[in-house]
Amino acid sequence: MKKQLKYLFVYNPVAGGGNNEQLLNQMEAHCFDKNIFWEAHPTQGKDDVSILSQKIKGFRPDVLLIAGGDGSINQLLPAFVDQDIQLGIIPAGSANGLAKSLKVDIENCWEIAFSHNYTQIDVVKVNNKSLIHLGDLGINASLVKKYEETDRSGFLGYAISAIEDFKEWETFEVTITKGLSKLVYETSMLAISNARMYGTGFELNKSGVPYDGILELNVLKPFDLKSVGRLLFSEEESMPDRPFHVIAGNQFKVNVSRKVPFQIDGEYLGEENELEISILPNQINVKTPKANTL
View: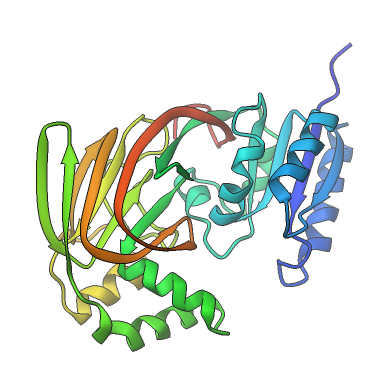
């Protein structure tokens, strides 16, 4: 007899703009059609990793389906990263960069979640914190902080914060150590990427993919106001004048001349002036449109 699959559907009950009922109905319909046993698991906002760990231990799902963005997946990562579980993504966060990099969107996510295709993706460690998509020092991290502190919502609020803070963006010196080599830059932003683009579609580099065992450091070149606008808010996937120096590798040390704002996957983490960065290959089995061929 064929084993009946089990899905655990994780969602934030206070997010989604009232969309959770629709998501739960969609989940119910798909599981009914495919004879899949499933349970819903709302997050609590406190002790979510330990609670989810216990739920996984007792329920033993084949697939963990998370409705959320990069931040939600990253926060819950310790509960399932070392488990023999496939992760499905329903892009429902304010930042869905990982889903975009894996070619998962709101139109195809349900079909992908119930397919047999998956890809093993890497996890980047930054000062012992996990990064699944993008993190950065400088400009963008300061905007993430301001975005969290204001009542503005949506991408317009992000844009307004950027314009208001433009005069406050000061450069800093960053020293990147890779093996025996050292590179020194004057910049306003250094992005750590496990992919090639932001969730907006703006391309940081040409080579980043989340399953190649390689991470990229992207150092912003000198810029003007027009460049900043194109950097943060353009949906172009490529530009003729590349705004970043890109250094690829699997392990780096980064020293900054002063403490600057730092964020990982959309979560502001304070100020840092020293980072130890490495990549752990093949850490998460993620549902994708085609197995291992993104």
